[in-house]
Length: 256
Length: 264
View 1 (cartoon, each protein chain N blue to C red):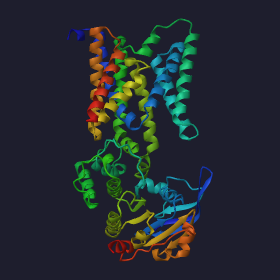
View 2 (view 1 turned 180 degrees about the horizontal axis):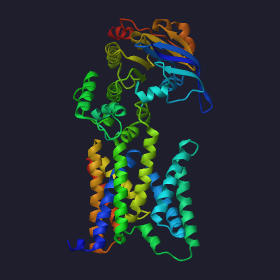
View 3 (view 1 turned 180 degrees about the vertical axis):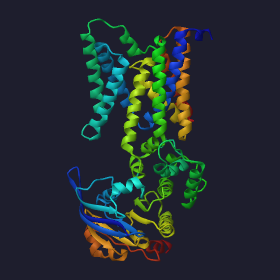
View 4 (view 1 turned 120 degrees about the vertical axis):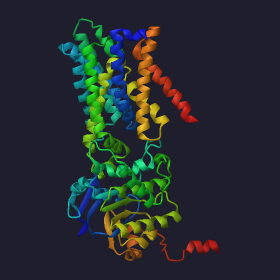
């Protein structure tokens, strides 16, 4: 089945055209990377899939249903770029992960011991065991991102949507991080849609890539996106293109 | 304990305790949702509602409650579109409702002493029926908040995430706004319109300084409200002070103590 089917999607926010005539479809179980410069409408694109922003024109179908239907069924796991959270917000890591279960529990029902255990399992899955009782607001950006992913996974989603998840994670950590995501895709059969700045790293892990800057410049196999023509049109002419290879040029240079 | 042998004092203590628990719970969300100024706006707007009650010869608590709920949703409606900032909307409703109250009171000719009870609180003059009304309203509102508590916490944590998890955030926010408006009006009897927002901000503020997770915060907030009310009533009786003012000053002292402790 198609995880995502978007036809002629256009979005205007406060009179400004953000996305124009986007057509894209994605098979279930695929890992899609979305790249594009700042202000290119990547976050808006994700939010329109999530049903958080209404399109001016066009259609978004997720697993054959409307975004609204998917919201009430808890189809999505969403990891936003920023939480804008007060550092003093009274929640520990385990509390935040447990929130992922709230939508399914219903009014008046509180997470049971079993739910908490499940939350702990997800914390272990993302390699953060032992951090359960740490105040979430005091964690580093990278730790918060990982806990956010555990929360998103705890809701047992069919589609995981991540907005710049590697912000706040150092370069070495990023490799591990993408590896982790790839593992979830394989093990849990998840469809993953991820916005990222990091074209090089993304191409190594995703199945498909979409290059977005108000319009969709490219959608297909990741290596095709590295074509100078595509990147030049997407980011403008003044772009240096660095291709990731098995041997890191920069590390080699530093070693010498 | 001879102080408790007076009927008016027994009613004051029971009513004060009920309101303290309610204010303690609501206060946690007022602080976390950063809506303390909304609370202040609603309480001052209640003055307009009280005046309508005086003029119409209806129980002012009832008119104040209806009026405050309308104002609460009015503020939310006008500011939600983003054209008017929330604090601007509050500023407009706040002062215009006070103005409406002043005009209506001046129309009623007879100068009403009772009015001071609403402005500065009149916990020692609470009748038995008012006490039962307070207890009933407290139970209903607490039950409503308990029902939506985890959803409200999630919505407060991050509204978009709550929507994506299938939580009806609009309903949750409206229920909280309604609960807050009712809690404010019912608390007016204790400390008065002018001081009621303190009761809805300070316990939560103290609790946030002293706790790192939600349930301890809830517990500390209710304890601060209860302690302030009971100690305030006792001291005001012993030294012949205004009970409302004393209650607020004690909770303020606890706030500064918590600030000092949290800095360590």
